[in-house]
Length: 368
Ligand code: SF4
Image (cartoon, rainbow, N blue to C red; front, top):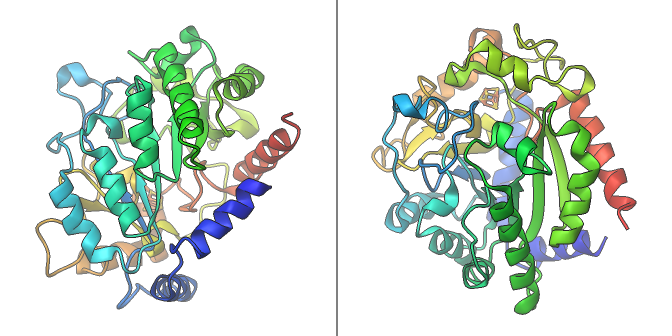
């Protein structure tokens, strides 16, 4: 409970909610409700990819899959420099509320990540990093991360033991991840900081589903604050073979699909998308995308380049607005969107999403 009170305090008194940002959010909301492409507004949520490179080879990710053949990520695999991040953020900081550092690479491979976070914090944005957890190797690094002012760190931990973990996190080392989590928890204690909140996030697969209780125990032991389970995304953005999809497919309510072949959603898919009315995804090379799922994945929608098209912002340019119109009229014709609810939630939206929220909440309440 105190955590939530602290969060509200931080967002209000801490300066995240300014008049301009709230007004911008409300205006985006009005455009969303009225089904009109936004005019004279800015994204409220920035999804920024610090690095296009990853140390792991996850079979359903365009960065990791088929890496031996050069990978399926077609754009340049690079790092977002602090100078380029400043160019991007300076355009949006007055109106955006949140900067989430996430993408198709591992954020901590970018040597400037802490500087990127510190810059976003200087501009009073709420910040979050999603990481595979292999790079917070000691207390010194963990202290640097805490001192950057980061608000939330999410560790992707897809298994409670190495055998289960490496099924999806190919080349991953669970012990290194566990030590990164405990380094973060002890650094936070050491300098008596409240942030970041530490979350373990697990995709539900046939390997992880039976390990939910072990993951809760692990989280408590390592000093994490919460565990969150999400459904797996099996969309065909990496040309992964059917066998791979079958292997990770989990039927029933713990899946967002009816089956692993058609990948038809269990949720009702409407002609809507919250992402493209509230957020923008920006890859490490500046390429803008409608959402985090599409950042630089092969052949997917490019809305512009945030570093090059300075006078024609991706948020309101013709390409983005025509994409929005297509979402409203014929979303099913967009291959990447046809099974996506477009809800601003981490696990695919719809009834399974509600189920997870209730499960996670109940489990948190009974945790001690
Ligand atoms: S519908 Fe889904 S995949 Fe399509 S832009 Fe929206 S969030 Fe992205």
